[in-house]
Length: 511
Ligand code: KIV
Ligand code: ZN
Image (tube, rainbow, N blue to C red; front, side, top):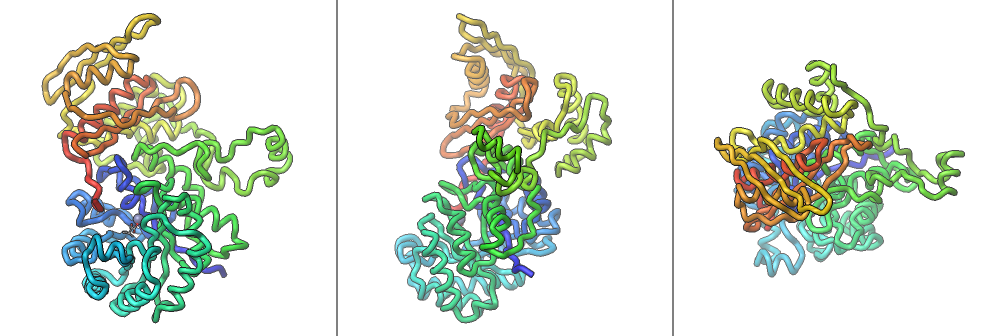
């Protein structure tokens, strides 16, 4: 039997550190449920000490997700460890992941600590974490720029203190694959007690080598990889889960390892994360890009038609690409709606939330003959704002766009309880709409990103719009979906504004 490779997903922690990718508690729960369905072994659900919101989200995920281990990050200090311990308390299996930097540059310039003090802090953190759970992971931040001898010393000490997983992060994406393999071999050979722990790789993609380095670490003895859906993460991102899993599966001859991942859940996971964070997937992205299985050249098409394996090393179906699936229609009832949502991993929080979603579904079914799974998922785009605290709502919208005339928008916006009619001109209908909203909101926010995606094929598809706004260093994403992309745009802009106003945005915890 092949050995096991553990998949540790950090989309909800390192992934969330991408600018504007911050998520609400409900969004995090939705992603965590999908990760559980995907078969992820460990879900790093957040960084409990970063904010009360993060701690609450980890706690809520620990309550509902039972098949995956739920983990919180913690710096090597008492406050962080206690916050992490409290957050993972309801988990069936909970892990504390504590870290401290070990490279000379980080210890001297950032921590201003002597290496002996770093070892002491790491040991104390692991011992304290063990009071909350047996499952403690230790990371040596910036390990790939650290001295191997010092790493062996600190790893020996934390293993004796009770760490069960030793993570070796390439924090700045500096590593080169063949050296990474050697580095892992050297650490495993040089650390007393190395056979009692699982060795783990955590690679960033600054030089585009995060997946290659993760796989190189596996060849050097790592049996856990830390990764994110779509490679989301700080700066250039983390190693992409889908690429690692499919490499190990497709090249079993090289790796001879098993994962617990249900690969048919890869594309649904990718779409969910992209939809919620507003980070689109590039069309030529491996495994989950729209073109990953598209054959344009005649020679390739001919080959695939004759024998698929001539040009395909894995099948589109094996990673979850399906034809748009027709699910519900205009006459479908509430129960069919509820059970399809359940199958898609969407559970409205209350009966009232279900009723509201059902009303939106009926409205959509009036406009669009065929409703696909993707439409149902999009029904929930931008609805995670709390209506009780939402300041702005769209009451109505009319735009006039005519050749040779400047586009004009007339909107009625509810600001708290008062309805405000407003007119604006713009260089296009979306521009006019945003100007009208800003004339009411006067938010002073900068628009960082505006993107539209067709949810399904066909001209009656819903457009899913993402708007990213920034104000005073806070970045938020808003989303909206509608068959009318101007309405979707207005909803997305208002959703982002409501997040800015309610302060649900999260400041990058590691800054
Ligand atoms: O990149 C990194 O070093 C990290 C650690 C906290 C594991 O994310
Ligand atoms: Zn990281």
